[in-house]
Length: 357
Length: 245
Image 1 (tube, rainbow over the protein chains, first blue to last red):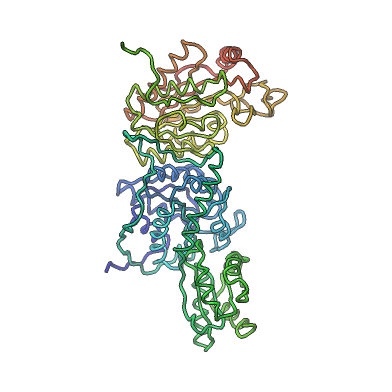
Image 2 (cartoon, rainbow over the protein chains, first blue to last red; image 1 turned 90 degrees about the horizontal axis):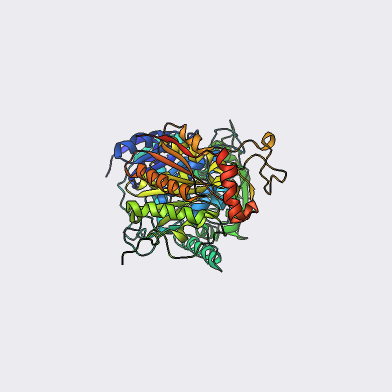
């Protein structure tokens, strides 16, 4: 077993990326993710990797596109307004079937907003914020350990399904310190070789062209169905979630990332108080763990969704459970002083428990 | 018999989509000749831009990455840093490089990235049908400057070769034209020199090529070529603006 260290979530992301073999980092300064580039700047130079502080978020996502087109694991990190600027590049990467990791340590908005923990970029990440219709992997860590583990998973899924991956977190998970066990990374043995990467022809007969322009008759339609097919395969095989107390739950509490951590404390309080409350936390936001929700709501007929926003993931919860359960929402849009306490969420559990369930 | 003139091996034997009198095909040829000259075609990764030159991969027999509009220098940065032993070049038009992508080209040049930038300046947005470009000349009539470019409203044409030369990170910056045999020979030499800067790891090299767009200028090929000499060259001086040893 490897050693346990006390590290901040943002550093765990950087350590996970290095463990996964990422040697190319491109970014631009923005709070509250600046620990990631600072760590990468030091480590990558020692390791002979590439760290570039780009002139803009737009340049950094395109440098990522270039390094990824060469077949290497590469990443960028930013926070909400910066991620907005990267959307063009993410769309091009998706259209060009390029993997790559985009880390969003969200801050509050819209606009300049503030730097408080926020989950209001769920739509942008999960429904995709760029043009043209595509999907990306989206993972949502709720602990420092998961910041490390899900960074690695994001690289693996991104390579396997040839689409960008987004890690969605906020400063609560990014800046808190917890014990981290850096498990050594073993690449999945069945990861396909990157036979599409540009290398220079080197005597190869066929050119390799990384592009998203398809003008031939029917070509773009076929391309779109191919991308859709990969997303469907991802949905079928890669849904991940954490569940607790699901067997006898009469009220199911859900949320992702930092909100889920607070909700989990509230669920434990409820159990101590003798209330049959369950907990279900999506770990992958795309693919959304709809099967876990369907299973849980076969018996539990009421779901409380908690988010640090006015309600975004709740729409996917409703889609997943269809009419099998009533879905209620409790949200605190981000801002100074608006992070809910476990007691506050316990109050919400009380409010909904036993009513209409 | 010894062939004395043939298609460069770096170019594919296909017809291009370029309009009659367009000089992209000629500039492609000069770039391919330079690739053949140094024997770098097997190691070359081209970065295509958005505009008439987007189909680079249809004409050059090389690996290609297509960049979003204006972003070719950032994409090429990622490519060259990831594959420093490959030969990397970008090929961009004036809207791509000098308007939407100004930031990317300036900073790539300033970092001294070891790729070669080919910049085709024809004073108009060709692919979208002839709008005003950052390099359109004062008084030039375009779809979006129907009365002619008014510098009090639209600002002045950007002299990019001089702008790039002013950056410490740029090692070589030159402006050439392809409107006469003499200028074509000088352009061929400049492109080869620019390539040598990358091959010898001397630094970032930038070649601005003045080019004709008869279709969007509403001219015959001959008239368009005359406009390059009479109107463009007087504003966009030919010459070498930076040549670090």
